Amino acid sequence: MSGAALAVVVVVVFFLALYLLQRYGDLWKQQRMVLFGTLLSWFLCFLIIFILPLDVSTTIYKQCVHDNSNNLTPVPQEGRNNHTKASSSLYSPMSVQKICEEPWSYIPDGILPVFWRVVYWTSQFLTWLLIPFMQSYARSGAFSRVGKIKTALIENAIYYGTYLLIFISLLIYVAAHPKWKLTWTELQTIGITAANTWGLFLLVLLLGYGLVQIPRSYWLSSSHGYLLAKTYFKTAKMATEKVSAEENLADVIEEVAAVHKSVRNNHSLRNCVDTILTKYQEEMASVESSCEEQNIFPTKRGLIKLHKKVISAVQRCGQTQVRWSILLDEAFHLEDVTKSQSSPVKHFVHSFPSVHHQSYIRRFIYTPTVEWYWECVYRQAFYRLLAVLLSLLSAAIVWSECTFFSTQPVLSLFAVFITVAEKQYSYICIEMVCFISILFLCVCVYSTVFTIRVFNYYYLVPHHQTDAYSLQFSAMLFCRLTPPLCLNFLGLIHMDSAISHQDRIQTSYSSIMGSMHLLSFISDGFYIYYPMLVLLLCFATFYNLGSRCLNLLGFHQYLTDDDLASDLVDEGRELIRRGHLIRNLIIWRERYGIQGLSGSSRAGYAELKDTSPVTEINRSGKVE
Image (cartoon, rainbow, N blue to C red; front, side):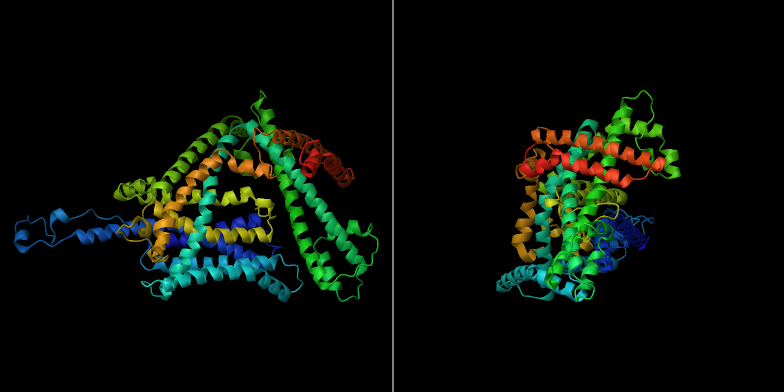
């Protein structure tokens, strides 16, 4: 295949990253620098996930060829005369090995080392230098590029200084060691080791939560009653967040409107005010008429702070509205499933069929009858089967993380499977197992970050509603965690000599990481024993210790034995009922062409905001 497999994977991965960026980001409104940095970061990280299995199969083939060449020994002349004429080989028949089968995805020598160097160092440059600068640049309220750059440099001064201090400390440690001589290669190894150590430290903490929570979420989702109750709970929490975002935006709009009234057209800061007004032209029209003129004369620095508040408030309000709409659709669909399960007719009926705009092919295949059988019959069994399979995969990962350092005997399940498949030359199985395992590890790690969402600061919102800061945060996170995650997986399958201490040909990916023996206290200590902590984290997640702690701190989590959660479920059910009535009213007015829709719908949501006990929960911490 030469390098055809590599070229095909590169193209497929690029379009995959582009599709995900189009789904979560806004290709037309967000800054081109933000989109380019996010796309490049996602693309490089996805390449590592997709190409590493090909690197493993290619390395196994090279190892086979190497073993054959070392095991063949010449036979003396008198020995050859005793052979039959059919044997014309110069080697003894006892030393002839099996013919090594070349994998379908074989990549020629010299390609992967260069490829990995470009991918790794580009991703590291993005995550440690460029993306943090771009984050500060994107959320800066300055009105010029020079001002944004200045703000970004000031905000990142402490950030860059901290990492520089850590690097200098490691440098002094290596320089003071009598056995080490500082060369360019060793400096690279120190930098790579420091980055991988930081990534592994965070990786294990996130992995311990995801390995338990993802299989459990699928098992619980197979229960329709649980899923509907949790949706009600999320609706009550989202209502509070939505009301808070709308109130915050209203306060910011009033502040901007006051500045707009006080700053005249001939004022030197008028251009700055006009720039702020372009962020929300629709909202400004309803505020101008009610705002009285005030003698407020802001400074340039005050306008920069106000501009930053406007950007944050508009993004947060837009995100909460989209997430609220998605949550309503999920609740309506689950209620439709409940009605269909009790219906004698095996025909799925949607409460709002006009909302579901499906293609002709999907309508032809996914008919109401097929949808009824899937939602009411097969979905539960499928989810439970998937949960069992994911649980077995999680158990295999936890066991291997705690035993991968043992090479005699081999205890890591992934290493055992790779060894068996290597003897059978089953390269397809090797690549599929590697890809599925790495992908599952990535899902466990990355989903944990965006599931916990500390202080609701980072989250990926579909329908092009993810803000620039969250996009860049995800790009930075992927670039920092993917390399150590893949290196850890190579340790699980005993293809990293720094951990397994085996005399084998290294993968091209491992070779660019350098020799971890340079820092023995990390390679022989931290890399071996720290991953065992994942077992304790899995037990903590299984017993919901983290969720209970967050609940005590005021971050309400859905716990079935919690009284406050039950109250929020009841509140969410009432909110969904009101949302159902409002959507019916909207459809009815659109169907009959009656004016005054926006006022009625706003009045409905205003009533929801004023009378909802969720607001009281948020203010007082208890249900009244």
